[in-house]
Amino acid sequence: QVQLVESGGGLVQAGGSLRLSCAASGRTFSRYHMGWSRQAPGKEREFVAAMSWSGGSTYYADSVKGRFTISRDNAKNTVYLQMNSLKPEDTAVYYCAARRGLWIGVRSGEYDYWGQGTQVTVSS
Image 1: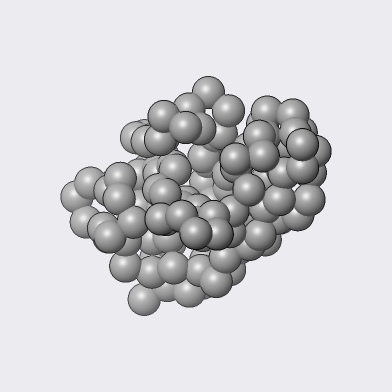
Image 2 (image 1 turned 60 degrees about the vertical axis):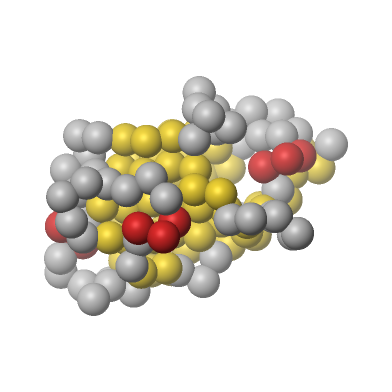
């Protein structure tokens, strides 16, 4: 089992950048595929990025492709989401997620463990 704690959210102007971090507990972090999803008020949860346990495979939703970058440091049990060129529509609570298995997963339902979320607000 793994426990996840996100940090790094905040208020930023449109066009700005933020880097979210997700710290994982446990000694088996390197065996988990990691992902990020987000949920804006009144909207469905959107899965935005994922990275395989090795870092060799990544996935990005079309809405963030070219602006967001997922990375991980297995030595620090941490996964990151670098968000550049932020837009007001990126405003949401961002959640970190982890899963075991053969593939990274590109939907929220494929992930087993979730953090509590961190708020990102982008002002226009």
